[in-house]
Image 1 (cartoon, rainbow, N blue to C red):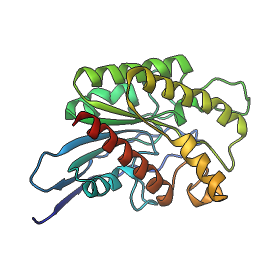
Image 2 (image 1 turned 180 degrees about the vertical axis):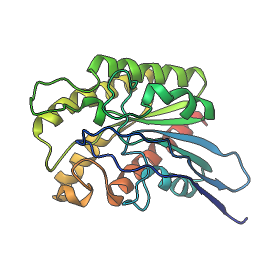
Image 3 (image 1 turned 90 degrees about the horizontal axis):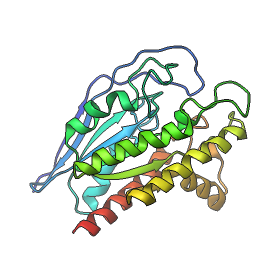
Image 4 (image 1 turned 30 degrees about the vertical axis):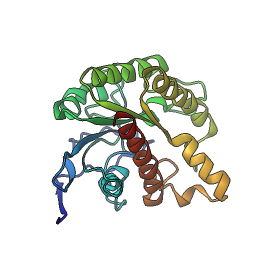
Length: 254
């Protein structure tokens, strides 16, 4: 049977650097990839920040790679990319450095409205970030609020019958001081605990990337663009792990 690949790309977002403090206004991209072989198509939404969003310096982010990887496992998939650079889990009212719709602002329209079978939630890098040079400075979204936001998303999706995979953010390298990672690890632990509590899927990118450096003895530049955003090799690592987790969940259901 012929394979029909439909790629729909509308306006892509400008890049947002984590440490850029200038205000910016962006619109959500619409990007959908579908693989049709005549059977039931798994509808997946990838919901997150610039690590999820498409960018012109990356050939394929993890969401673009998933349909092809899943097809190799016998799963037909449609993946909707709802990533926006600069986004955190909260609302623009919580932290408005970037004048965009954040996680809570667009959860209804960018996730629930699609009636997904499975949602990949990848936030934390912007939530945890400390603006300024004080190691004990406040994060953009406090840890308790971050936990509350993720909890609300998980419960809302599970009440609709959707499966959830949580992505723990990868660590920072390069120009970012270690105190940013110390803070970020607290957010990673929240993701892991919520995954365990609500029995969601989990891909721990913090561990995945750290293990890559340790085992391969490679530099961060081999999988990161700028110390925070994965490059194509980094996205390939992520996509492979996410694919494995989707297959595991699919096997448990069937």
